[in-house]
Image (cartoon, rainbow over all chains, first blue to last red; front, side, top):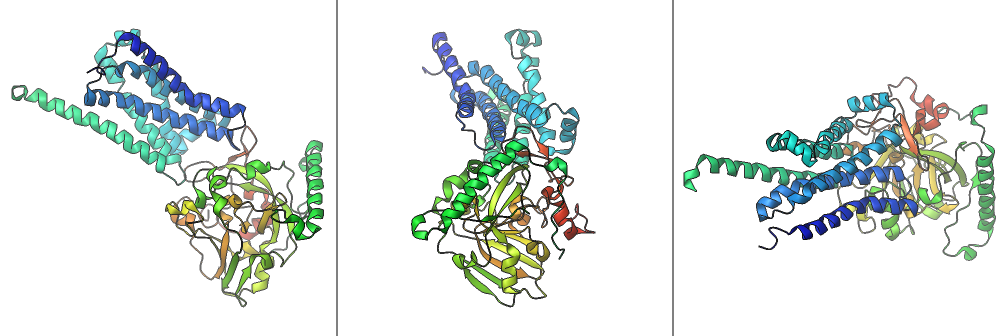
Length: 210
Length: 311
């Protein structure tokens, strides 16, 4: 199948395309910012938007492994690191809005929030847990850690995604449509992993039967 | 009911010159609008102007939130849960003819036609702070008169302990009602002494205009010392009751939204802090004031009450 593997040239173009596409949400915010399009509460708009895109990119990143299992395509895995780093990029913007604009480096206020506000109690560590993943995303780090340990460490992405969805769920005042959508999506993505893990385990136990 | 006394103004509250000039310009425009309103209505055919005499006892030494923000950033779930949904979706709301049924524990229950109701007292312009439970705030020049003027007309009985406000329930005009995000119709309520308090404004307009649909046209209340959701919009019925009404938000989240919902920086929402707020148009958050800055006027209503328990 032609889609199974892409040659390096096609893949390079695809990477450039995805890179630009992942910058579109930021570009939209910038354009809106310069054209008075962020509405009456621009800070809330930027915080919400960067949070939304963090979750969306996390979902896309987590969709790649199941997609490979379902289709047999190999090339999406080559885009995964970039997508994950973009999720981290938007998470950084999101967190900066909170740190600088909302709290203005009021560490005591932040500490209180982490203890008292459940949505921040889960949101803050979910962001912090993305740091080791971003730091160990280079080829050198993968080599140094070794594939197995690296894969184990990067399972933290599941925790980040679950934390992110719970964070969104708990901060919404009443209309849960978006958080529910993310929760369903994430359940499917994690559910597929469990399904494939179970299937592989059965296969390993009964090699003769295959 | 406590008698309303204007609060003495401390020197720190004196309006800086640029703000004063801004206000002065605004008043000139308002004066122009008032004069214009004296012209026969035919001149204004199809126009939205509404004149009100500025009441100097009800103003705040803070900058007005621009008209554009007041009319484009709204919580009005009848038209959708997004802040920009009401401005987008409220175009189909028919505000004339409109009647308001006033009933329950009153000697003179009545169905008021809106135009009649607007004439039972002189329309004033009052500048109030508006504090949303979501920790943002505005300063809005409303047009209306004290709800007490209407209440006096219908003569509540001794059994009238509470006042319930019921908003329009018509999914064909209010597309947000096609989703059960809240229990429709929207219900709000006040204790009778809160409803009688002169600050509680029966409101028909803002910024020299009839209320835009997204701001609760054609008739709403504004209770400036309570979180914004207490100020019911597009009211079709006002009921006087002996029992405390159950409001839509109390049903939606009993642990998060109480009957009183007074602005109080020391009593947090179950999930977020109420100590600070973002004034629309400002970058950093500012401190939230007790009773939204109306402490001297309304604290007496709650003497001896545990405000944490009665949130």
